[in-house]
Image (tube, rainbow, N blue to C red):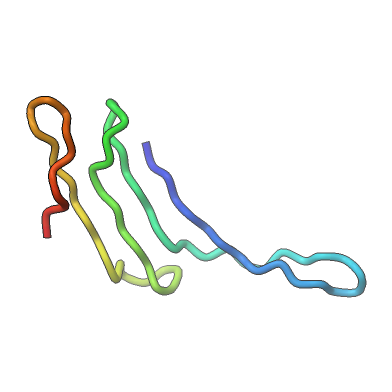
Length: 68
């Protein structure tokens, strides 16, 4: 499963709201058990991630600290 955040600006234009372009800001990946395994943050859409965390889980499924 992948969750991504695409914020965008909404601005008034001639008495109506206009949606601006979407920009990918972060992506979170989960395994089939619903455990977070990867999280990436982007400064600008289309760029390389400025932050990335990879998660490991112990045998009981508990999340350990992010691996640098």
